[in-house]
Image (cartoon, rainbow, N blue to C red):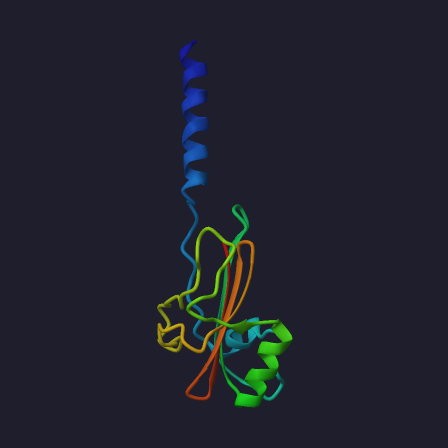
Length: 147
């Protein structure tokens, strides 16, 4: 193999490694009020007050996360859970995904503050897509994760 061919092969290897490790710019947190409502889900009642939302997607791998915090009534929370088809998590509940994603993810934004406990969490899991919701202190917390 000639030197020029070897350089091409090395350049291709470096490009593939850069793509594989995700050489992208870090996503910027969203702090202004306009962008809070940018990711308002259509299943959220119109009376809900958005407190926080974030959305991240990796189009290369198909991974993504959505987080929503909104002030709602308990009745509105119940309606949202029913609309989404979420059911209560229990200690004996079995999931079909190899990677159990039943946890509340953190965030750099202090407005996203669900307790880490999964007690009283409602779940829907289909293959690699997880949806979690819970009602705490007058707030609906919703997290969707696709891995």
